[in-house]
Length: 156
Image (cartoon, rainbow, N blue to C red; front, top):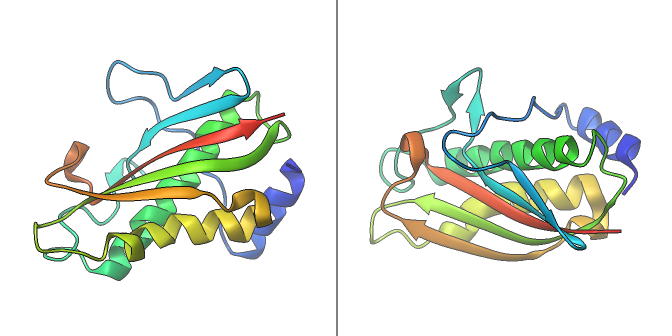
């Protein structure tokens, strides 16, 4: 993956990678095992404040959930880049993304929320950003977040 091209594409979109988040508990942001990089769950935070907290489908709209998922995706890319020495050059592709959506039991639009991150990855990485995905509804998430995202990347 061309690191400069990813950063340029983000800039074109009016986005930039944030500083990687400090872990909230007893884990590390990234583990590399063989040719895979596992990014720990990212809760969308800007300036120390959770983006669009609450349950999607009640306190949070689907569009607000998509925004939160996009922010979590940016944070996952930042954690990946930081953990790989400050560059995405070793990333061959995003292989798997899991998006957890805090929602009431009757909510069924988890895929629409997860698209906020999936569309970001495809836009900035092209085919290498397309991935397998799970969008899962949960009763609650850390810090009252509406979304948490974890990803696995293939490395070269």
